Length: 228
Length: 245
Image (cartoon, rainbow over all chains, first blue to last red; front, side):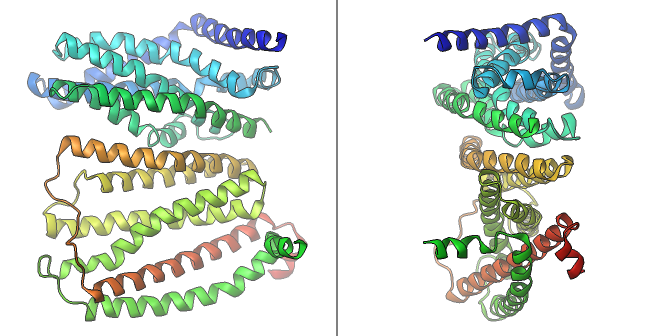
């Protein structure tokens, strides 16, 4: 019983520690948000200011911008702890490594994906999306960004021992998260065309449930390889 | 029981496998060449001209085998990578790494021949069809495997990391395939369908199947050859390698 209680405390402790670290370096999280806004503003510059066209492509475009922004901060889930050696210490705690990884992934999501979802309505308004569509976009990002953090944590662990850095991480993770993009952006589009969002949200939820269970095991395995 | 185990693991030692692969390669090369000649003669010479597509359909004798191999090799690669990861078997990891470039090339050939066929038949090099898109994602998965492996200096760590990525990829492949398929049906972008005519002339089928076997032989031969090189490279400090070279 006591080990369970202390295990949960460690779980909470890891989340609190990573969030505190993120708070002390606000510029990192802010950079991700600003990148999201900049990429979203570049699309009209590249495509032209025609409002109908922009309205039509806004959901997919905002989703791609959020996806790229999420990629930017992924390597930070483990890399700093790996460099200064604290990841070795964390791996030795009483809590099983997959749960530690889950805690770190949750903290990462709160400091990146959740923020991306929160500012997405403002960006969506720039593209003249109606309020209810903005709501659907917000929910789809709320369901989808945890998936990006979970699947991304596998890549973050795998690239710890490599020289490749962020580009390699994006290269190996982006093909794997393509279903998230399809159903995330697809939910908004299907809502716009009057088809309803139930199917897309169910599939996103199902993927989230599977990833919540499997991804921490895979990233824990990848960290063990890097720590050997 | 023990004799059975012995047979299984005898060739797990890189040195013995090096010899075995060396004696097997000529067989695969010869049968690959013979099958290619037979397959191409049937495909390009004997098989009838398609009444809808004319002679441009004959690309299927390259295209279909390459597409099948591209998917099969990914599974085989992930299988050996998993064996290498789970049982810490060096040779299995080397086999997985030897298969990856061949798989990537097959994927590329499938995409390329598809584009060449699509231009005269559909009037376009590329459509965002479900199969094309998922084949493209497969190519990216191969690239990811190869670049991750190349970016890690410690060979054993590279083997294990890339193996984990291959396994994650295998779990993801059906999800990617179905998501792309549903995405495609929602968009209804492509007006053309890849669905072939329900019946296929016997000679066409025969030629295609022979070409599939030819591609098998080629892939095995090339993978074994690459594996032999990997063994030499990684075991270069061993005495037997110095004797071989």
